[in-house]
Length: 230
Image 1: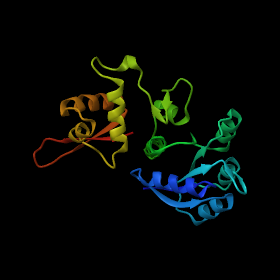
Image 2 (image 1 turned 180 degrees about the vertical axis):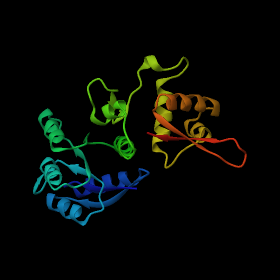
Image 3 (image 1 turned 135 degrees about the horizontal axis):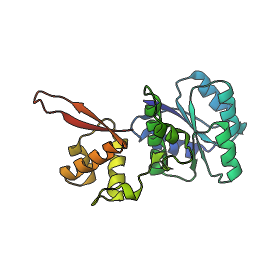
Image 4 (image 1 turned 120 degrees about the horizontal axis):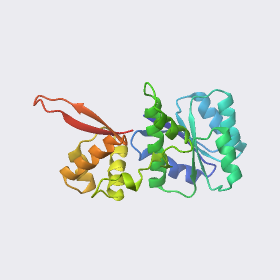
């Protein structure tokens, strides 16, 4: 479970954002803060993996807080949530150590995508080692796979004949948002497609390393294919 501190100077907005977080599997609200001092106090108490941090707060900016937390060596990550679209502010956030930048106003789908991307990143960094493709995605290296909301995107030219981008993206989202590994049957039911079609798409996504496959053996001797996000 990933513990999230929700921070916004607007009490109503903070409450809405906390509700959004609570709707995303694998995440829970560890606390809510409305000022720079509140953030520092919550971090000091511990138990926080991720901060959804407003940029403009009483007592200091989100970027200044992020720099302070980095200087303290705090092992947590920051997603900035702000209406500030200025390139200078985005550059400042990147240099301060902000991991993601989400523009207000946003809804549950937008936040859910950011959190899903963050969960994938944590899983990747928890592995024994990373290849260059994974490193390029983590660091957003030029020439690496393009990303949207932290998700590597598949060029059209790589899609097999008869496949559609919409179905590829639908199945990826189903797998990524699942609370655990899923079968082709479960994916087919959620996507509204046949089991055989779901299997073809899942095999393709596994082959291109956009989902991961594990086998579960039962008494029948035939392994069950389980798919997870990467």
